[in-house]
Length: 218
Image (cartoon, rainbow, N blue to C red):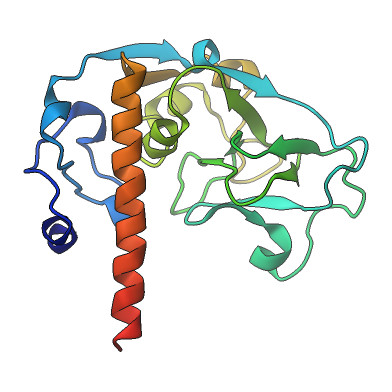
């Protein structure tokens, strides 16, 4: 990571509060290289204040793409991920998620002990089981929220409202109303959120490029 930062001339490191903890996978122990970020003003907002629940159904059969959440790859085609279609062939009762919207998978795993929240970016629309909690952003920068939900900072709020489902091992018992009461820690200004979101989006691109370059030289 340090070599990538040096090659692409990121400013000297400063640690800012929301990402100061241990970050998953490719962002472990990452220090953000952007000198102006230390002076940000942070505020607490309920998710329900900045987002709305998405419950639209695929009633008209507008999509035949079954989606699933991968902790590593986000919202992906279920048929490719499992090498088969786990979802029902008739998906008219499923949620219809559109590009840019988010989904929360309440299933736990070793990689995602409190589930995973991902944004749909690879497809225009797709279908999700109604076991997911889906939402669209009304305020704020979506790239920042993507980055936020890749940290562990949101886990505490989920832990406070979650209980293991009695019938479904590993599926957290979380009501949508409680989920939208969980709190986010956000920069107070949209410009600050955008700067952070853009920085991490650029880092993702650079990491992917660096990994491809390493593979091509083997």
